Amino acid sequence: MMHGWYFLDKIRKANLRRKLIVLISFTVTVILLYCFMVFVITSYKNSRRDLDNYLWNSYFLKKEQLNSYLSRIDYTAYSVMFSNWVQRLMVIDRVASLAEFQEYQRNVIHFLTSLSSVNDDLSFVLLSGSAMVWSNNSLHYNLQYDITKQPWFNELAGRNKYIEYGKSELFAGLGDRWSMTFYYTVISYYNFSPLGYLAINITGENLNFLLANSNNSTDHKTTFHTGNGDSGEEWIIIDDREGIPILSNMPSTETKDRPFPSGSGWSSLSEPLMDGRWTFNVYIRSNVNPFSGLGSLNLIFLLLIPIIILFVMIIAAFSRYLTIPIVKCKNAMLEIRNKNFGLTLENHYQDEIGELISGFNDMSGDLALLLRENAEINALRREAEIDMLQQKVNPHFLYNTLEIINALILGGQSGDAVQVCELLGKIYHYNLMNRKWVSLGEECEYVKKYLNILKYKMNNLTVVWEVDEEALKTDFLKLILQPLVENAVRHGLRSRQEDACLAIRIAVRGERTELVVMDNGSGIDAGDLADIEKNLAAIRQGTPSDSPHIGIPNVYQRLYLEYGRTMEFSIESRPDYGTKIVIILPGKISPLPGNQ
Image (cartoon, rainbow, N blue to C red; front, top):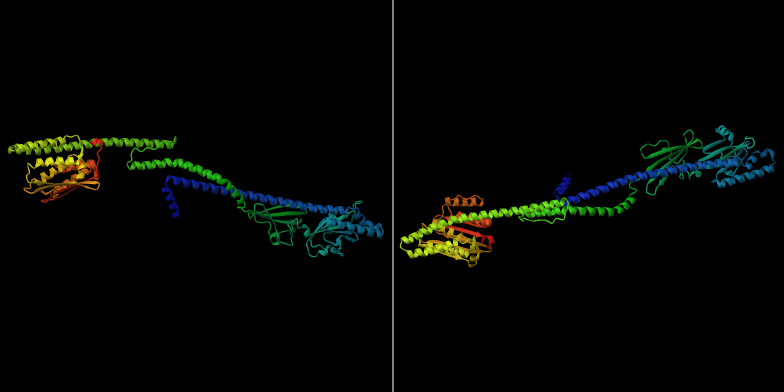
């Protein structure tokens, strides 16, 4: 039971092609089994009918042979009785001399001997009214036999014919051998008066050919075999008028059990014989082998093999016709799930399969168009957000720079104020460039101008640059590095009276670019650092930042809008020791033309 459920579960989980193959195999197997069962049943019925017909024909043939044989005996008997030789011999003892009588006797014996030789060696005996006997075989004759003293003599006298079965007293030379003796009354053809009697003896051997070489002294059955391997048994019993068996090839123990049980394969038929004096009974049992026609079945299977192969090829072609487009649609949907949008399939079908593929192509095209429109909308939204963030940076930087210029002028350092104004102009010229992407080298130059302005306010500021020349050519988002530097100076180094140090490191790490901004300022306390991390998490979840701080969240949001989770951003800070911000960006990015 468990194996059956396991097999059904495997079929349920199989793909469409395997399910179709299993279904076809199962259908072909059921058809073949059904054909085999129909063939066996039909073969059995046909074999049973053919065997019954064969046996019944054999029965009627034997009956006709027996009738013909007995009729031939009657014909021979009448030929003998009404022959001139016998008619003359029966009365010659009263009208002829002894020499003439002996001559007639020799002629009659010769005549009977000739008849015996042409009639299967039958024994003929002529009995006259005075008990004189003439026979063709004196060795089998009982000289003391008196027919008038037999218990059945009256029946012979009344019907002119009597048949004796079993051991014969007249033919004593046969011993205990079974035989049949026919007694006839010899009638004169002058006045129809009885002249004597004729006895004809048939031994059991004479009837062997009628009962399949057996009689009631041997228990042998008649067996038939047909050409297709079936067989049958035929038992023959001949009863007299009282129903007593007089001749049979059936064992005596079975003869007593008649009729045979119905439903056990036996069939029977009874017909009168010898003008109703006998009953010819035949019992037939058929032994039909239902698999006897398997030889023909092999031939049929050989003829069916090409048909089955053609059928399987047609089903396989139809299966391929159905499953290939469905499998292609499934694979195309997997590609779409892997973000390979806009995929279409060739369609050569004009039926429901073609409608399915057309529907898939339309769906894929509409989905790709919708995604492109959504991407364009998102790009415009990101541009608007970036512009808004840049607008937050520029006014703040302008405010700080104007404070420096104001302090220089008030301090009488007009030359320095002019130089700061020139640097400020170059900075705003950089800001006003309609470019989203710049080289990292340009961004570094921009930061250096900013730091030159800042040194007029912080004389104790030391800036350390550690930059890989190779990294300066990397494409980089504009206005990313400067807000971090400004944040480090404003919140970390402003309160430091001496030895204020700012380190900027830019390095290439394989396919990635690493930026590090580090200061030795006052650091960020744990509460503020937790707030910053919370704001960065809100940006990753798509929630706008409500932080009052502009620097770090602003930079992170712009980077996240562009790089997503492919970039790394970390903040390390310890109060009174400083802050370190590390940004690791993916490999060298060649910006899209629309981003220039």
